[in-house]
Length: 190
Image 1: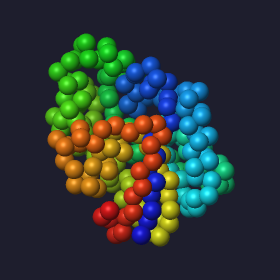
Image 2: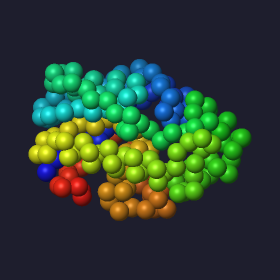
Image 3: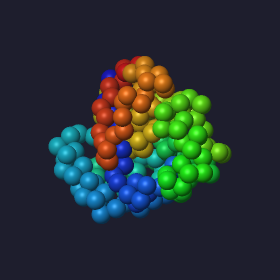
Image 4: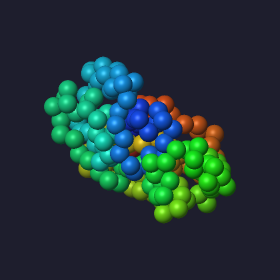
């Protein structure tokens, strides 16, 4: 059995200023820095064998809470990135809603029909996230791994493992920064 801690990145400027970050980079806020310090305290006595993060700054900075104190290398993976928001990236959510209200409603409803112009759909991010987590687990049988990623990717991946369909995902709500989800994987299924 592989134990995985899926950890959402600390608060980034895009979160604070209500920006559709997607796969754009964003700096950690002062509050986010305090969240990273709290994560370091939380995981101080928890043995971790490996640390992975998306290759975006906000996840790598958050991962420093675990990999630095434990003297572990950080493994970065592009397949752990947030859902691609295409032309919406780095734009305010309010502005996106004003210009593309119908599509924004699909996003808010976690509709499988959602796709930002030039972006990724929820089924695509769900498939990508699930494959990444299963690949990481396969490379660390019997170990404990910290995986730093993003809210929409984590939410879709966990829903897939729990058998929650896209139409039901809205009931799951959103996780705070830096939420921690624990998964145990044996030969693929949770």
